[in-house]
Image 1 (cartoon, rainbow over the protein chains, first blue to last red):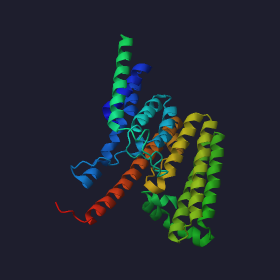
Image 2 (cartoon, helix red, strand yellow):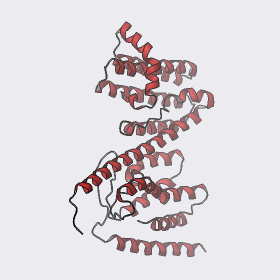
Image 3 (cartoon, rainbow over the protein chains, first blue to last red):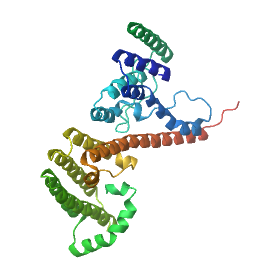
Image 4 (cartoon, rainbow over the protein chains, first blue to last red):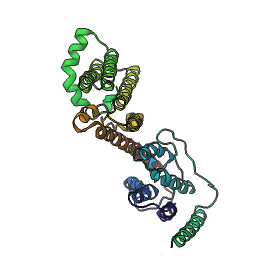
Length: 145
Length: 197
């Protein structure tokens, strides 16, 4: 999903759970900022394609795969905060809604998957998700006023 | 041997070479035997730490690490590297670290949760070290550092450094695999017959 959708979902979580202070940084860090890992592959992409568009390029790294729970769960226990896990899992769910190839267990196993509902158009899934999340954000915002 | 992946490898070899040559030729010890002696010294160190004899523990740990440096150097120098030796060294090293962290917790120097998590972080990094080549070496050394800066802080450092190393390892492996995939794709593209416009 696009970063905009991740921001919307994380904001829903932040509003629903009343997250604030240092936890807010953790929430947006694990809910949104993990996407920064795509930058790691930018030099490789440019080398391969230049400025041409390759739709199914594998931008993802293990940081955005379920295997990352191996380090995020110990981290959560260590800092005594469930925020990293709580905001990382929805990030995963959103990413697994789009049909790009994903390697959930890499680098330990090379199994790949296209995620949930691979036959439904990614654009449609994104539009429906955005509408739902905007509505949820509005409802939560109005409830708090 | 696992430490062949360490960036400090060459320096370690240069330092240990005269000693290892002497020990191997004089006493005919094999690398695996030395690894086992290092393991025993490490376990004794953990026992001393558990009994709150930190200085004795540090001395024994130093002996353990000395022997740990020796076995790898002998194996490389005399061509005695084996798969079994490699596995044994990993098992011995991690076992010593596990008991050392638990001993620190038993002695009341650190919490059990922190000790276990620091060890989990070490295990995670170890699981990828052969493929990534990332080994930050911040494991048993916490015992020495902890003596000066306090064990809770040293164990925290061990946790963060090894967990960070694990994340870095994942990214390094990911990057290498992608680079290789891209290289193959570029080659295939260049070899494909050009379609006239």
